[in-house]
Length: 447
Image 1: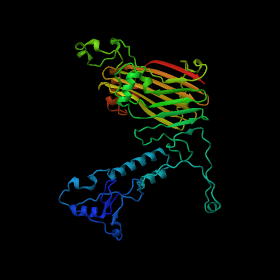
Image 2: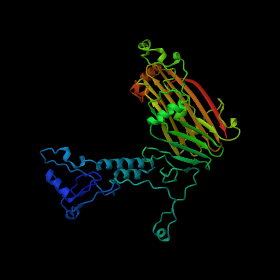
Image 3: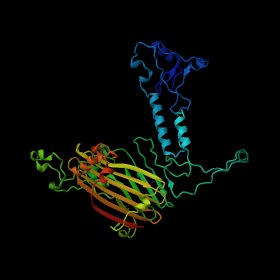
Image 4: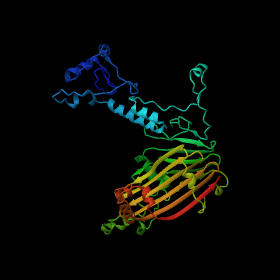
């Protein structure tokens, strides 16, 4: 918001003409804009709401002729409240984020960058083209566009932006709530399949205590647990579902590991003889979990409606490599731990849904510096029309030094993506491509 003398004023602070005059007398440096309408507009300064029109401008006048420095306490924007410049910057950033979600032509992109308007305009929902009236049809020679074909999917989140051409959902849009929670979902293939996900904050102290007391068999949890996050796939017709969440993944951490089999940090030999071995816990402190998802089926023939081992099945990479339109995408972390600055242990899940199929990737990435690298991957493929589910599980593992040597050799290549070998070691996508496959299992189910 801006007062008549272009002085920036915090939100929530009503300003009168006396306040403006007192500021002018105190600073004795500002110059009022001279215009015919200044006398009428300076009688009362009205606070502008955050959703101001596009003609609003926020500025701070630079004083080049001053020889003394005014204290920060006398500046109006240093008082309590939110500075309008910060609000304006946040509004611009949010508007750019919304524009990035919408497909635009080259003309629209150029006009969006050249436009000086800072007011956010929400994305317009898709509406079928209406028939022109007789008056408009006579004046316009352009014919209306044909209506798009009916979509196979239904979006259950009104905050998701739509494609301006076909009306399909582009990507789940976050909702500004406290705490920040986003829970998009959609129905597909004649409402037979439902895909949903949820993102939230990390667990608080009360929730962690509840997990330790009632849910888990060990009391040392990862540093960051996103216990409310999940990705869920449901077949509503057959009452079958598969979900990925943090609690079930941590339940699969080995708590009866032999002391000799526990992974140790590189400098453990220097202090292991000086500690009481009876005080050492026999659970896997790296939180390695071979979690493949939580499968639930409610109905008859329980055993026939579960994923069955079938190692001869392969994922149809030809279909997954097609450039199909993505209707739904989400990517989230379930838990993460830096292993007391000795590496990283993180479980990540992502999903992408197309018109005829979907793919879920769950990846556990472990790196213990100077010791070991390990990756567990679970891919779930679903063909909607055939009600076919394929789940593939892979294990990768190698010594840290072997992976690091590959990273160093590749960093010397001028065409390499990573010029720093340690940066490559932090990228799970690069690491998994340079690790040997230890084990592969595949399961399938046709509902």
